[in-house]
Length: 152
Image (cartoon, rainbow, N blue to C red; front, side, top):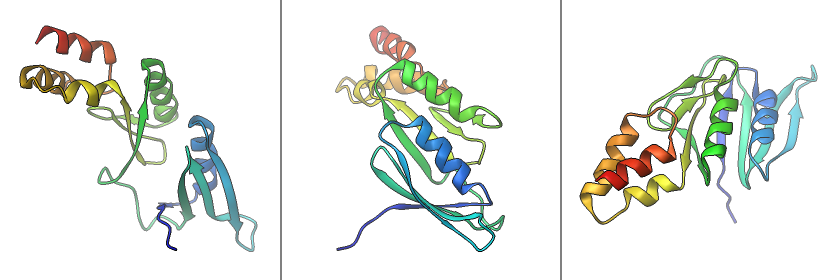
């Protein structure tokens, strides 16, 4: 039986990143750290809310891009705010439409469940108003989405 997981290439921060990520996402843990002869982490296996990841300290040859991101669906504005603040701290960057980069350069999408619910309304004016509001945002604000929906 095969399994599928995500593989992340870090310069030299794989263990640090895994510890950081697992501290922010519930139901998460560092599962294994394979170390080289010098004792430094080489490969780190961890789970974020049950999804398995492998992180390699592979050196600076490859960097992250926005072409791939970790998508986190959250229920409340407080969860959006807390994750956004934690992930953009210490060198992270805000991005458009619920996207951000953390201090390691990895892209994340922090998306409240209200966004796809409101955007899937069968009324195209309401769904379009939510989409237009979202396009003006960096961090998603649920109340602003709801206000756009209600005004359409």
